[in-house]
Length: 573
Image 1: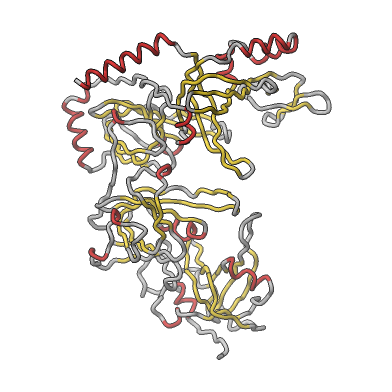
Image 2 (image 1 turned 90 degrees about the vertical axis):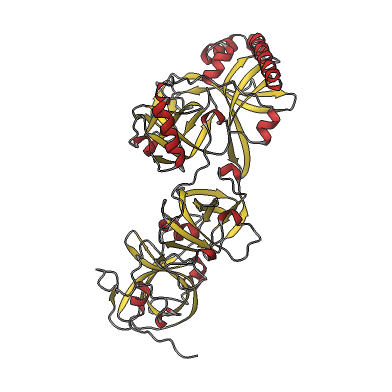
């Protein structure tokens, strides 16, 4: 085997993405410096380095697969390395090469040449490649992800329509416009910690969700822009998880480091792709929806403190109308700062439906707000509004509460639901907890060695505390049973007594307190539930909280049943 040899100009070729240049194929570079990349516990260890061709040097990161070679000093300062699979990146002004694999390496004990940094002032970049590297990443070959600007006219027949994508497609290329892009989210499971992001791409045939995990996030997240047109190929086609997406496609694409994404010239690809729902047809659903409406009212953005983080944020309420009805929508965070004018048209992509206190809408991180979009639905709605819609009176009545079976709540993992159920059991051994006495603080307090109650949130000690209910109850109907948590405010409404008063009663006469609790059992209630997944000891469970509980008013319920039967009879005639 011939010894490795540096070729001056190699770094410049890599920096300019000249992938057709001979020096781009298995380039040989010298390691000038290498050190560990700072990482958190559980993350893979990587090394960063400076690589030189004797004339210039450039930053580089060795993938975690190559870490053993650096840990055992098989590759060290002044070693020569021959790159096999790699990608050039320019993120936030930092240019570097990410190396997935090597074709070989050799020891060397002296620095070759007197190299200078290639990226110090940009003067090393040539004009032969007009691609914007900070927007588009060009890989070395098909082993790594590709993303380049393509200004050439291409044959439209070579693209697969999105609605034709399925797991049996071997070779496919789709082309479309990015209509949604999520933030990067972190997660943890039995395999460790990870991250993911997703986006949705649409053509004139349909729309599909694309998901990227781990290293693919680093590659693709910086280059995906909402509203731009891309081609995508080489990804795994899987069944769609409808819980997390509202498009009608049965499949989704999962990217990996071999996937290829290219930004291409804008053309007649649809600028918007919606699946609108009329206001009268909106019902509670796990999946977000698309809606178009006229802004009838627009409140001011108001600040509030997020309970979970104790940080300040914004919310804003608006009222939307269409030919079928009206609905209230709440925008959160940065979306509350959007400039929204009364009488304008809003088309909202991916907004969440809430069914508490009447159906309403709430923005989420993937929601996209389009003001006065140039689409037929917008023009038609505006025409209706200008002729007759302006005189429509806003009416936001509470929708009839839809009652579900407990089995449906559990099997469908409904985030919001209401049941008609019997209160079967209340755990009496732990009905309440000692709480901080400070206003607007509900944290649990603990006694210290001095007999004082300590609140970590308020960072205060006191000889006094208050008491708050935290009741664990079992509810049941004919289809099943579940455990749910009843918090202080709703517990007071149910029991008609504060936690402190109940505590005093229990201390004076335990038998009386037991009899008091039992009189609420074996009664039927209308119960609104809020449910969420919780990870406890690596086991996913549904946690159910009671947000409202009231006894069944049989007179009112009978009236509703009669009206419902009369409605069915009228419709049948």
